[in-house]
Image (cartoon, rainbow, N blue to C red; front, side, top):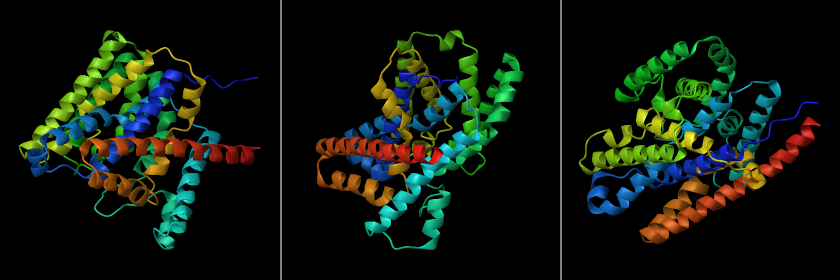
Length: 346
């Protein structure tokens, strides 16, 4: 009789941390707005802190994909069905919730969005659920990637990754987002690079990845500070594009930062049933707060209200509490999804 491998609590904790960082990214610049040159000049301290939080949190998406690469995706009909059911459960439920709250009227195109996860909001160039579509692409290509990792030599795989990141850095970061094949890291192609990188690091340990975990944490913090500092300098001195390009998921500094955080958590010794339980539902937090039927009224609007209603420090406290509340609600709602899914598979 086969048994499912036990969840590793250190990686489940990383999953939880990464998901909270997703909330931070979508609360900071996404919800409260990108700081302007005048903001940086007139509110230097506040904007510095905002860039610091953004620099620390911007690893969130890359960490999720690196985790998939570390363990490897083993595609199956059951696994894919479970993933799609979770996404559809939240998407359709929040569509109904949106109507019940009176946030919008029934429209067929909104129902289509709920069923296909493809809404593109005004003034945006990607859907809110962009991760779903990009990850499905990675999931479908995983057998090919796994076969290549298995059959290639360490040298072949290493050079593939080096050349991939040289290509992405040039055409997917330095030359801007007009090279839509990478979309600043918002794409299946960028996910492929992260997946192969994690596979390589896990399969072929090197001196630079076997450092004491304190060094991994230091590298993460140093890279985050550098990202935040460059971003702030860009907005303070009004250097066009610098303050936004530095925060792209395809930025090699952000990728280094993400890998360092993964390596730090890989070396932690932890076993906790509570952490495993929460980690199993962590993805629900993304599905709740970033749904096009919840994000604008249920997440973005309250955060802006806190920011306008209170001074910086009290506003920060209320925003953190609200994010924690969203996290807890999402995990609890996901328990309903789990019960329904178990009934269906039986």
